Image (cartoon, rainbow, N blue to C red; front, side):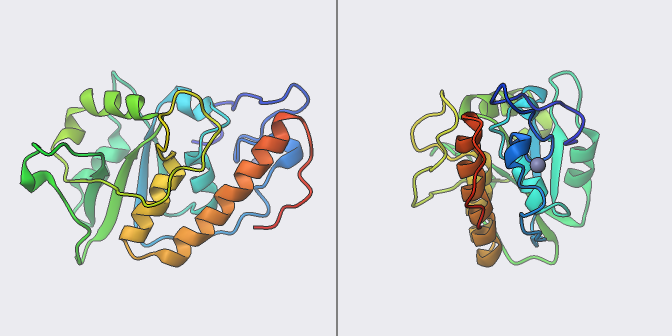
Length: 214
Ligand SMILES: [Zn+2]
């Protein structure tokens, strides 16, 4: 998925790497740690989102390649790959989406001990875009939902239009992993996300980032 769509440039000076999304001068592909989370993370994303350099789902795929699936969402087509996961007996599927108080109780889900592999569907993009994906996808509407009450506000400042404090995709994944008691993995992803943010900000000015520690 990561090589299918060309990531837009954030500086005229350098092309963007199609894997990490950063200008090639600050590509972090070779230095990010590789982890494998117990939970499967299924990210449903639009083509537009895949082309955005500020997309953080791509970064998650880089750090956690085996347990992350980036799946293209299209209004006119049902994503077969996702349907396979939903119908599989191997996975305990949840969708991350805020719930209203009047939501039927049986829809509210918690991470529970199960023989199955926990799998979390996360709708990529801004809150508004995620809402649109859910509204137009009947196959998502009946799934058990979980929502987050993050203690920390978002540190993601690369995108205009997101409401204040709204978590970006990778920050939401970090919170989901904490719910799944994967604290060490959550910490490693957070370190990579911090590096991504520093590299992105330097990259906007076409500057090479010297301090590349995670
Ligand atoms: Zn790269």
